[in-house]
Amino acid sequence: MVTEINNIIAVGVLVGVAILALKTGLGCGFANLKRREVFYIAGIYFCASTILSYLVGIIAPDITQNILATGVTMHLIIAIGLVYFGIKTKREWLSYGNDLSRKTFLWISVPCPVCLTATFFACLILSQLTNISNLWIGVIVGAIFFLGVCFFSFTVSSVACVFKIKTPSTLGTVMLLFGLFYLLSPLIIPAYIQAQSIPVPEFSVDYHKIFISFLMMTFLTGVGFLMDKHKRLKKKKGGEKWTHLQE
Image (cartoon, rainbow, N blue to C red; front, side, top):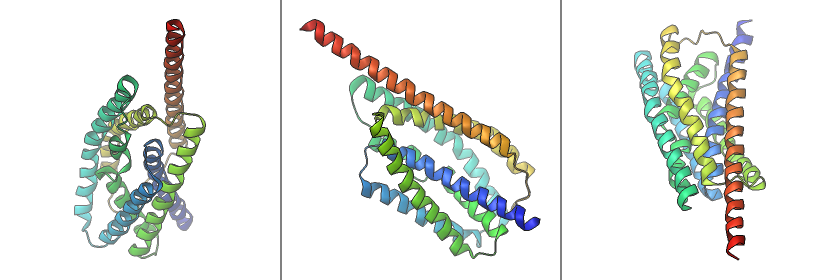
């Protein structure tokens, strides 16, 4: 029974890593990047995962808890950056036609302290639940990151091109949604850390609430895409009407 629970938790941790890869893939997919640049970013995540998994066996438990607490504090800074630059990306594109996506996407795609802390925490839990060496845990987590980032980036880019929503404005909407989500994290994670015994991962998981939260984020993302597409179509029709009147 204990083994089965540990396996379920381990799978859940790997799914969490895949979700982080999805976040990065969304940023890369909507930004104006080349394929090799996406591979570079995915490679950074692979290397970071390997290094962090190695540090799991070196860093003392009390320092580990301080690292997690620091990551929670950084949520606020990252959230403010995502909201601010998300708004700026949308405004510059819709108002002036300036594409800032190659710069602002870094806030959502490049490894930040929050992502690194989550990756470290994932490696820590896997090291406690399995008999796999820390180095191989890092390789596994890094491989999931690398493949996930590449897959989601290219998939999002292709789908966005088909529906004609691959614009800096859409990237700004995604950044805003993640920024709002990050703003809620400092309210939830500190209570979680205080309720847990670090580093022993003994906690209950409410899969129903997680599923509902995921559906809500998906719904909000979809609404943002549709609203952005509607505004661009409305603006395009207005421009065509103005041109017709001039003629």
